Image (tube, rainbow, N blue to C red; front, side, top):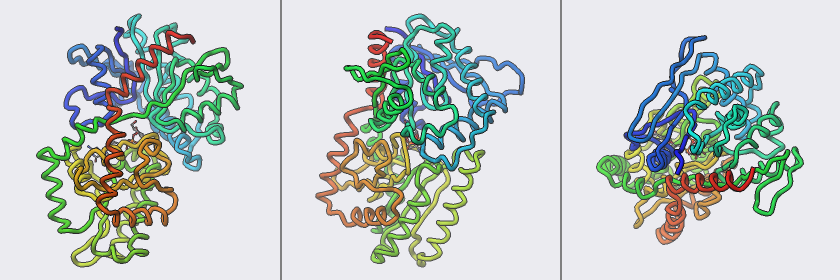
Length: 461
Ligand code: GDG
């Protein structure tokens, strides 16, 4: 069995995965199983024009290797192309794009540099798995350098329909580079179909009988691999010491009142202003909830160097102030807005103490919070998940209350339905949801992808 080489913008941690997200845990497990290398950005900015040393750290059979970025690289590749061109386009926000050709050049340059620095680390039997929108060109660049190993790509964020993707100035080059991968993985069938449609409409592709595509002289395998979480581990967090402590803390404070919870990085894709307005609408349209129901949003800031991100935090602060000003009473505050990151075990306890989980992104590749909320519930008295139809998770989590996240009325109505839902129905829905999220674990997701990649590389390019 060949080693696994994972490439992603941010790497690790190898230890203390209790603080890390699901992805790190999933990858560490398979990396340990096969041995291998995890290659990416160190998170450090080096002086302009200097050659970044390879920073290396090993733990058993797993080696983490990273390089630094210069400030120009960081601005053009990361803050520029990845987060001002690709992220908004892939999330259907063409209004927030900034197609500066310097960004495009920076993206190409950094992808090339990562390919060149990765190549000497490779062994002939390695399987290479590239992650996410930061490295869409890497596979083609490795091929151009003569790398013959199986190379797979998984996109964690949505892949938009051709009508949207074609607004990206170099979409043809970007998609052509993707074709160098032996397997292209998506979060949902919706995303996989969007690439199929693009290949047929823009590149004259034919579908083969095994579901692969013949396009521009290549056979390309693509499919949906919905990412999973370790539901049982997460359920354990909710009843761990720290989980229970936070559960009790909140329950005491609530004193019989109902709690609704949202947890998201601050990002315009997460539908946060719409969600806050829907909470306001709930108190307007269903006044019996005033003084009885409150909403907590945990929202650690991210990418604040990009203007659209700092703007949204200000919008949310404004909305919180306005809604609280309008409805608060001496013993009740409708919205708490926390811009700090909480430990995962504490989060799990808070999910469990909340009758409603609000996951209403305008677009999301998957959305792991939806799965974590379900995992953390008390089986005897579970809460209700209100989930956007535009999250990849909605393809699987069909027993959630599925909403249109653009419709403030629809969200408010779903909240009211959730608040009033009888315990029997809550249990019935939750049991189905829990059944679905325990089918795939983080590690089984990785294994499935790697198996399919090995297969695809063997059965023709
Ligand atoms: C991308 C795609 C896809 C959040 N706040 C805190 C905290 N979190 C954790 C959550 C969850 C993770 O961060 C967020 O994952 P999501 O899936 O919800 O969203 P993105 O960050 O946008 O992730 C997404 C994902 O990749 C995986 O493929 O699902 O669609 O956009 O695990 O719990 N964790 C801690 N404190 C917080 O305050 N500890």
